[in-house]
Image 1 (cartoon, one colour):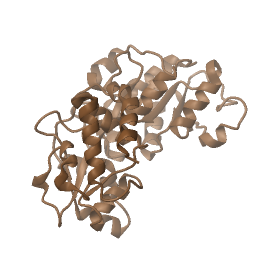
Image 2 (tube, helix red, strand yellow):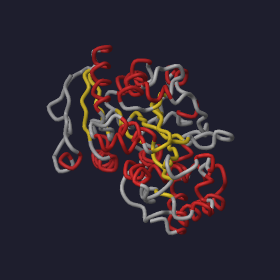
Image 3 (cartoon, helix red, strand yellow):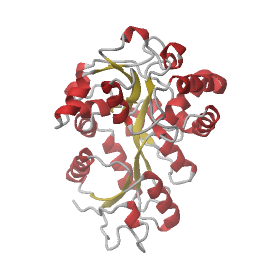
Image 4 (cartoon, one colour):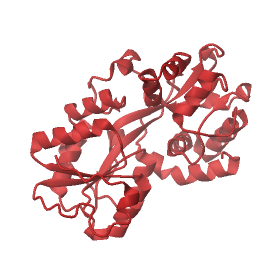
Length: 341
């Protein structure tokens, strides 16, 4: 399998195509903001199954989108892969995707994981969950995202900054369920309950709970699994001090976001690009993403990583993921108004 492995920063200053010198008749060119070993397995499996060579340019999502806009109709990109509906929506707004009408994707993927116009699709799910300190906190006190804004938890919540796309999408879901006024009231309540100014990534929030700096935190589920599987004894010990709650199981279900992809508007290998998207919905690809990167599959009945299997089933919010992008601008404005740094 042939790959072009360049950082977007380096690629941005290079003249010409990211895949210059690549003139295969049977190839697909992927711009990817995902940086997981599991994706290497997917590319290899796709080539073995179809004979289509995979070329990959990896980089930051915003840098890749900027590059594609600059390249215009000359862009070699056929498929763009990234994480979070907010980023997929931004690519959509920039006109970087074209509509795909695939019987395979329509049949395999739940409606909530498909853009209404087929501009992009979710292929893996990430649950944004609540973590608590097993020693200092009674988990029966909290069961919903809304509870995080309860004044009783003043000074107890660790959460990332407002410029984090995961939090923007969480707030976007709150806008959908509670309206702008209700979402702003919730965001203000969370700000009031913060144990510290927002800092660090999702792992740092979980470690803050383990250390006792805060009793509650919000993070994506797979960061916790990574700590459980860490080679570092301290990480594994920290994970054992933390419990996890899937919020809102009595009503709408837990907020989930996606790793997703779309066919690029100017794809030169559109047919191969669609075949790659369809491959991502296959049992084989779904199992790889679920097992190797600890993500939840979007296709029903797929075997998950043993840790995820041990958690059992949980109810997920069924709103269409495109709504998370549509509500993103208002979410950012709300964050600004309530002083969520």
